[in-house]
Amino acid sequence: MCQVLEYAEPGSGVPSGILLRRQSVKKGEMLFGAEQLFKAVYAVKSGSFKAMVPDLNRQERVVGFYLPGDLIGIEGMANQHYSYSVRALEAGSVCVLDIGRLTESGRSTEAIQRALIEMLGKEVALNHSQTASLIRQNADQRLAAFILALALRTSLRGLGGDRLYLGMSRSDMASYLGLARETVSRVLTRFQKEGLIQLRNQSLMLLSWDGLRQVAASR
Amino acid sequence: MCQVLEYAEPGSGVPSGILLRRQSVKKGEMLFGAEQLFKAVYAVKSGSFKAMVPDLNRQERVVGFYLPGDLIGIEGMANQHYSYSVRALEAGSVCVLDIGRLTESGRSTEAIQRALIEMLGKEVALNHSQTASLIRQNADQRLAAFILALALRTSLRGLGGDRLYLGMSRSDMASYLGLARETVSRVLTRFQKEGLIQLRNQSLMLLSWDGLRQVAASR
DNA sequence: AACTTTCGTTGATCTATGTCAATTTGTATG
DNA sequence: CATACAAATTGACATAGATCAACGAAAGTT
Image (cartoon, rainbow over all chains, first blue to last red; front, side, top):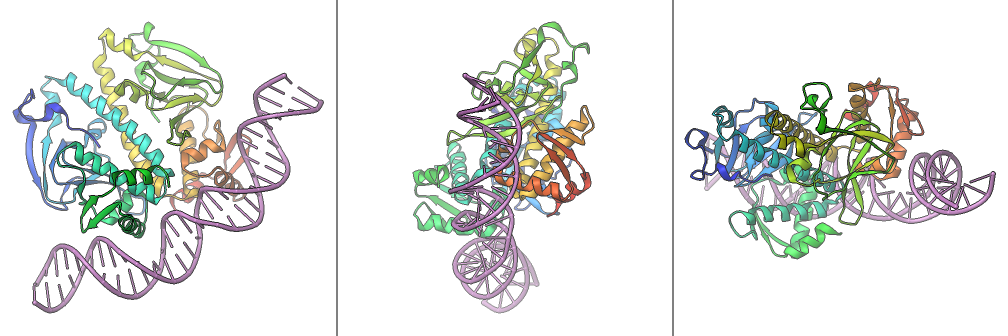
């Protein structure tokens, strides 16, 4: 969803110290709840997280996933409170960026604001195009695009993007993609039969990057 | 989509002069194209506009509508270039906010950045919830919600929100809502038969605010 | 005004995907 | 390890909405 701020990394020109705090999270633990007061921005170090908004029907709906390297909660900064809840899909750790204190210090506020604006702007642009496409695409396209996006994100960071660990359940994917979980299941097993992916439990192996691209684009 | 910056209004503590420029637009005229370099932010004074992103299939897809009082193009500020094209649905006028020069001047940069962050943040939050709901709702819900949102926006600004002027075509609505234009047509006529709205040409009259709310929530 | 083109409506199908239900597999708990 | 519980798969069926097609109504153009 978002890139890590370069200056958020320790030892790289950060005001340092006070701002950064490591925190480990257990599976299922909540980082923060929707409507909660904005406290901090979180940089994912390890593990994965999902963002959910409360639905009218008391149902929660998944609006995003965060992987190592992603920043969580920036737009809460703008609104005083977060606009969704974030829950850990597996055990992991985050870096807590205590923005409140950071801006208080006065130093580098300018740079931070600029970076923030840039990230938010990118997120808005991204959201626009994603929303637009999600609505119009069929189940195959949505899932292919989803897998590709996930693979791209992980490959941009650490490990080779061919092997993905899917921390989220089929229901989470379904909720995120606006499909029934049965549909997700069916499509994934079909993709497997077609030799596009290989799937065992939570780990997904990308067999045909190009095949998936074709599916995402056409079909 | 966005509120007007208070300080963008002439005569209210703005650095003034250079920044603001009135511009009238004809029906069908483009304010700017996607991928175009960011020049300015536009505040809608009169008329209405639609935002479109280019699709993979050379088709354009509507991602938003702007009414008087809305600000257009803020997130272009963050990314150097706009992420969508904007076209006038009818004759109207805009206020051009030449942000580039404004930030150069150095004065009030801080305030502007803060406001910008706040607006972008709100937009991100809004997008999240909208995307989330759009995907899961059926045609009736989407259209009811769409009409309600439009009515709310116009009533928050100028005239009483019961009478709306729909500058956009059914195809535009359909594209925006992820439906076929035939479906939009059918649902609207059904809403009319059910006494929820009255519809003549481009003007829509809201007969049962509550009825629409029910439809949007349930059904 | 006559013409052309775009837009809107309505009807008749077809299909993708949701829903319901049953079974299997995986995961947590005592 | 056995039990219970949650998640995933698979099948059968129902349906919302897309698509195709025809027609009528606006609106722009000459």
